Image (tube, rainbow, N blue to C red; front, side, top):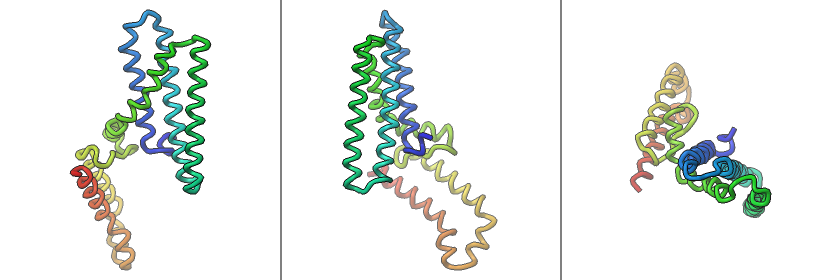
Length: 197
C-alpha cells in the first residue's frame, strides 16, 4: 500500500521505525521514568510516520490531480495544515503530561534521519526482497547490476519462446518487442554515467 503512493515511502517508514527502536534501546538506560520516556518517544515516532505518509500523499495528489498552478498552492496549504496538526499534537502532550515532550520531538526527528538513510535502506530491502523493491539507480552499482541482470534473465526466459515469432512478423514488432534488452543496457549505462558524475 505504501509503495503505491511513493516508491521510497516503505524505506522511509522502516527507517523511522528503526531509528525509534535504536533511540529506545540506547536512551532507556539513562532515564529514571522509562514509561514517560517511551510514551514520548513513540508518540513522536508515530507523528513522524504519519507525516511521511501525508507528505507522500500530497506529492502524489499534486502530481496527478492538479495543474501546475493549483498543485503548488495545494502543496503549500497541505504542508501548513500538516505542521499545524503537529503543533496541536505537541501542545496536547505538553498540556496533559502523558509523555516526555523532548522525546516526542526526538521521535519526530526520525523523519529527517530516515530521509538521509532511505537510499541505503531501499537497497537493503532490494537485496532481501528482490521481487518487491527496485534498487536506487546510481547508489549501489553492484546491486543495480544484479537487478538488471535479473531483469534481463526474466526477459530472456519469458520471451524466448515468442521472440522468434514476434520478431519475424513486422519491423514495428521488432522495434518494440526485440529492443527491450537494449533498453536495459541503456538504463545500466545511464546508471554508470550518473555514478561517475
